[in-house]
Every structure is written in structure tokens, then in C-alpha cells.
Length: 478
Image: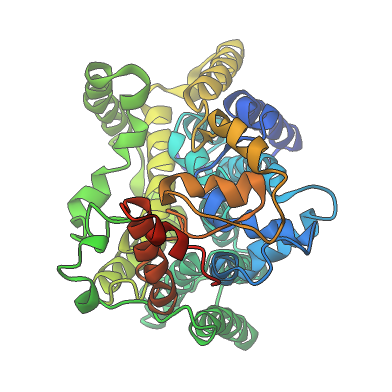
């Protein structure tokens, strides 16, 4: 690959076209959610239901579950949904907003690809992005994790384009919307700065001035203060590794499998669950993709001029190193630094997207294609992306519509009791309090678990009771 230097700027028409086509992919993929209020991301039911209070203050008054869910949603997400509540409800916003993030991430990847090579590489990166279900699967719902890949890509792009204030702004947005991604970005910038002090590498654009370090300190303060309020509000602290060992609620049979922690080898190859069409076409075609695609990509990668390309990939090297260090630290301080794989999966999938694009661009000699062929393949990628991403990250809860209708007229201060696996839909779609739900059965939050575990015990005692008095006892005041 001959190094002609990065382009000065992205063509405006290309950016507009990338935005329009990405919007088309999103509409094709999430059309069912855009036309059905009961098709949402699974985790919407644990993080956003309490936001109905902004439209009706009488809802969820004094509700333990609502207070807990409100407490662990990052401030930036709460602020955004509060603004959106002026024009729409939280569920509708959670269905539409991921489309804006999907377009934004596509534009970031286009510009990163442009800086790494040329327009053809940029379009290849966007086409690969459309065909990777991981991204839309995590953007779905407009939750905190929906901001992880877009804000990480924004930080990478600003670093690539040597925009220090853009890097600082991206870090502060990470601290507000997705704190554990802030740790990745801040550590990557810190590692690059330390490496530059040895004189062997160039200094990163950020941090380079004293005010940049104040920006980093502000981000650390935001993250630290959020964690502090979580504990002081009575829901924390989080459990330690010793607290979890031999307790079944933290293993495969529990709310979320935390132990045993997957190996680093599994984390590195797991993105191929999404890249290969296991869910789309079945086992045999997916295995074929796992064999053929790497061979094609490797063929292209060996053709690249890595000496010229390596300096432009500096942000990726440091983001990858920061993610690995935090991954191993999170294993040592399990849950104190959140789930270990969160520090890897977003950087890793962004890296896969760009590496696949680089390899395919070189192996297939995309830069030599006739213009009409390139346009035809771009249109085909748009349609294929819309098909492959169909309902990515979504579930349809319309089957319980008669239940929602039956409960819609009960008093706003009523509490509905039932099996936790069925109760998540009640706060979300009926807008009434639930005694206990599956999605919010979080044993890792010690203060919260001390309050919710007795409810679970009482519920199941009544659920399987032979004596009617045990059912009646469940209706005591909370």
C-alpha cells in the first residue's frame, strides 16, 4: 500500500451519503421496533421504566426498584432522556435514538478509514460495519452501553485527526454516559503520554497542556462521584470475588453469569460469533465464513505497507493495550472495576471492523474497481446490512398485550406481584410498580440485595404455598 498521506478532509457528499445509507440500514433492520411500541431492547425494561415519572409524577412513588434503577443509570443518559421527555416518552425514544447513534458511528468509522487510507477504504469500513450485528445489537435500546462504541470511536477519530479538545470532549462524554469506557480512553491517552516521555515515540495530542490534565481529573471526579453516590444511597457497595465464590446466584444459574470468568482467548475470538452468520445461515455456512474470510483478509493484510500505516494506527494500539490492562485488573478486582470483558469488547470489535476493512480493501483491490461496480456493491451492502441486522438487540413483548390491558386501570400506587420472569413488562408497559422483577434481581449490589432478597423469598413462599394464609401474608405493607 503506497503511502500518499491522509486526506485533508472528508468529502461532504460522502458523509451525507454515508449518513443516509446508514439510516436506511437502521430503518430496514429496526422497522418492527419503529412501528410497534412493544418491540424493545431487553434491558430497556430494567433501566428506563422509571423515566415515565417525568411524564406523570404520580407513577412509581417511593418504589425501591425505580429508585435503584435510577441510581445506576449514568448522569448523561438520565439528562438526555429528561430532555427527550419534553417531546416523547422514554420507550419511544429508546426505539428511535439508536438510529442516530448508528449513523454517528458510521460517520466516525468512515473518517477513521479515510485517515488510514482513502475513500474506498472508508466506504469498505462502513460496509463492514453494516454487516456486523454486534454494533446495532449493543446500540439497541439507547442505554448507557449504546454510547460505548460511538464515544470510543469518536475518541479514536479525534486522536487520529490530532484534535486535542475533541479527545477531551469525548472523554468527558464517556465519563457522563459510560464511565468504564472513560477508563479505557483515559488510560490509553496516559500510556501514550508516558511513552512519549521516553523520547522513542511522538507525543499524543492529548494530554499535552496543563488544562488537558484538568480535563482528565474532571472525568475521574465524575466517575468517582457517581460510584460514591451509588453507595451512599444505600444500594452498594458491590460484592467482592470472595463474596461470590460458591454462591449459585453468581454462576450460570443466576441472574447473570459472572463466575467463572471467561479466558482471554475466548474474549479475543468471541466476536466471530457475531461476524460469522451462525444465527443467519446456520452452522456450516458460518464455519465456511470462519475459514475463508480470515484467509482473504490475511492475504490483504500482508500486502499492506505496515511501516507507513503503523503511526496512523497508534490510537488503536494504545486503546487495545489500555483495554487489556483494565481487563486483567478487573479480573483481580472483580466487579469493583465492573465486568472484565466490557473493557475489551468494544475496542476489539472496532478493531475487527477496521482490520477486516483493511484486509478486504487490499485483497480485493477495491481501489481498482470501476466506479459503477463500487456503487453497485455499496447498494448491495446496504440491503444486505438491513437484512442481516434485522431486529438486532430487540425482543417482541406484544404477546402479553392482554395482560397490559387488564392491568392498565389499576391504581397508580398499586403493586403487582408475580413470577419475576414475567414482571419486567409491568413497570415498562403498564407503568405500575412490581414487587420484584428478574432484570432487577441484582445480587451484586449488597445494599439493594439486602432489601430485595426478602421480597423474593416471600414471593416464592406465596407462589408455591399450600396454605392461603401464606399468600395473604404477601400483601402486608412494604
